[in-house]
Image (tube, rainbow, N blue to C red; front, top):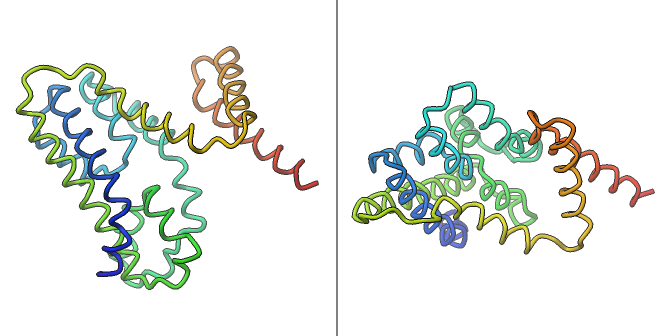
Length: 215
């Protein structure tokens, strides 16, 4: 657990402030502060939680919420292919580890340095990451309840975060161009299923480019 805590600290420095922003967003959306604790504890889906706040405030149908959750978090199906769940021994541990499989947990537990980590360290790492998120969300909600006026643009915080991450991740101009072309094609051809079709086109294009590069 001590080693898991040390490993989690670097990611916790980012999860904590982002959780605070989420908590403030929950309160600013008109929900009671304790909903931030419930969302971060029970849902624990990062980016989808930001989307969920908007869906809840407009009382979206459950089918819409479920479909949105699937589209936002479908990447976790692919994470499961290489996540070291087999090292977690107990059934309860496997259940929690599956529930707590986030982008950050996947990145930390599938690297070369983590190849020999025992199951207890994996579970400990995921637990600490979960605690950072719950604590940040709760603190943010409590602080947000003290702010009388609505903070304009707070709902854009997650979008801004991913824009920054995308800028840092792009190594060449072809990848964003492929993404833009896939989005425009999907928007023109299948406007009702734009997001799903765009994801599919982008995935096919990237796999094709990889196959051509290897040939």
